[in-house]
Image 1 (spheres, rainbow, N blue to C red):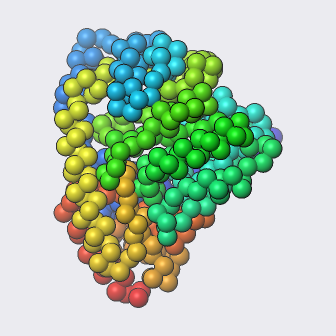
Image 2: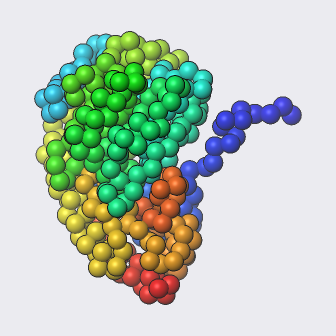
Length: 385
């Protein structure tokens, strides 16, 4: 038989899903592995979805998405962050942020273009760059300075083939939130070298120690920035698969072009639920964020009391402690912790070389389970110290 696509064949399976699948076959596991809210979608949003089903809203929508939803997204970005986009030419509803990332990279890249990717980073970033014909170029960050993305390090990685910088803030897996000044410096660098910026802001509402900065709102950034967002995390709507892209019209138009041939549109029912989420679920979001913040403080405090160095996660719902004191590498630590104490975490090295010596722990888990997980981690450390 003839060979299949070499780029896809060379892509490893998701390191996150590997541990999720193992844990699913075991009893009494506390899962800190998958980045998914433990809250169900707020009732008012579910009810809107039920209403949509009962009344037959099961057809295609416009390829770009429901006008009402696009208007609300653009109004929210303008009111919340001062980022201004036209709903009817610069906003596209996608089937989750994952599709948005894929579309943005396909539109921006030609074969051989380089994309600078600060790491540790979300596991999909590098594969999606490669699937779009690009070449990911890693720039390391470190826990000693809270996984800050240094513009000087990014500048050192720029070559004649560099086309874009892909960044997530708040970040998965580290919980790092990039300061506004750093993002402004990154924007200046992009302007100097004529680069695009792809900004994954799916965790924008999950920011605990300061205000979120929307990259598309920075002076001069708008014409070279693609902003990605959605409803999965803050609105607890992972299974509804609703995301969005906001970008200059010339980019957004081409994203719609790919989208209309591959996905057609995001689910109609899900879009109606997302309208309800933006119109009436702000109180639910506020309550969930406050609960995450409480868990964050309790969990990180518990890890530190065990002797694990853990940068304070300023956003998202992940802690990324160093496990070097155990003497184990990330993969061994995660495998042994799962089998010996029934706690599932994700090895840090699946997010990039800088993640080795760390594990990702999602605190989107009920507080009593987080406290029990800390106790089990403590028992495990006592056996390896």
